[in-house]
Length: 376
Image 1 (cartoon, helix red, strand yellow):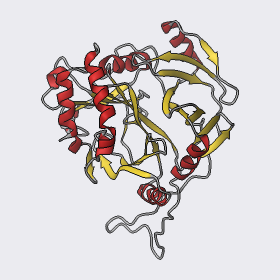
Image 2 (cartoon, rainbow, N blue to C red):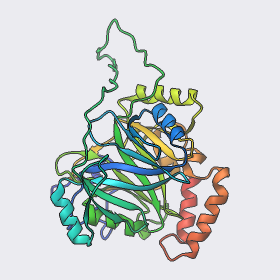
Image 3 (cartoon, rainbow, N blue to C red):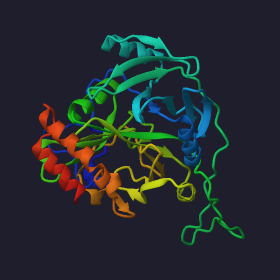
Image 4 (tube, helix red, strand yellow):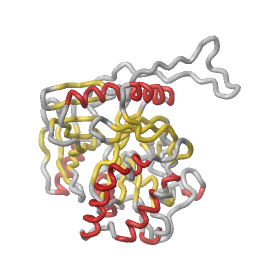
C-alpha cells in the first residue's frame, strides 16, 4: 500500500481514512472483474420500453415478443436486457470477468457451476446472489458486437485557445447516443455485508466513502466502488452501494460523448414528454456531468459525461453524506431524486417501518441520519 496516493493531498477528497476504518479493498479477493457487462430488467410493455430506449439513445440489438436487447455505440455485448414481466424492476446484473479461467476459480471458491449462456448472448457464466438477494452473474466469452457510428464530440474554443474558426456550433435536438453502460447504484439494508461481498469476491476497490452526518464513528453508509485494473484507469465507480430501508435499484448511468450531446439529448427527451428527475449538473464524487430521467415505468436512468478515471493506486476518500454535497454545480437535488417526493412518501414510510422491525443495519439512528441527508 506504500505506493498508493493519499486523499489528504486533495486529489479527490479533503478527508482520508482514519485508523481502524474500512480499508476499501479486500486483502485477498477471489477474482478481479474487468467491468459491468449488462443489467437485466423486467418490463410489462416492451414496445413502450423500446420507444423510451430510442429517445434516450440506445440501439436495439434484438427484439422478440418476450425480450429486448439494447446496446450503446461502443463495441461489446448488449448492455441492457429487458424481458417481459408483470412489474418494472431490476432482476439482475452481469459482471465481466477477465477470462474463463477466472470463472473456474470463482465457481470453485463459491461452490457454483459454470454454465452456457443463451445463444443470443453467447459465452459462459457463474450465477451468484449477493447478500441483499440480487442475482449477479459473472460472464466471459459473450458475443462482442462491432462498434456503431459514434456521436462526435464538439470542438471547443476554450478561453483564448482557438480550435474552431469560421464554423458554428449547432448541436441537434436529437437523442444523445449512448456509448456504454457506466454504473449502477443500489440500496440495501445490509450495506456493509453487501460491500464486503463485492470486494471479497470480485476484487473491487472503494473510490469514496460517505457517512451520515455526525455518525462517522459508526462507519460509512455509502460507497462508490470501481474495478481493479491495476495501473489501467477504470471508472470512479462501476457500482455504488447505499444503506437504506429496503433492497432496491436506484439508478443506472450511461455515458454520452460530451455536454452538448447530454443537454441536447435532454431537450429531445423533454420534447417527447419524458420526466427529468434532476439535472443538469456536475457531481462531486466521480465528477460526472449528469442528467437524470425517469423512464415510463418510473425507473431512473442517467446520462453522464466526463467522469473520473482512477487506477488501483488511489486510496478511498471520506466525506459526509449530504444532499447539498452531491453536486459541484447545478440545481439543488430534487425531491424526486432524493426519494422524498410526496407521491412516494407512503411507500417510503412503509419501507422504513418494515426495515426497523428487521434485524439489519438500518436502525433508528440510521433513519435519523438519512433524514438529515435528505433535508441538508
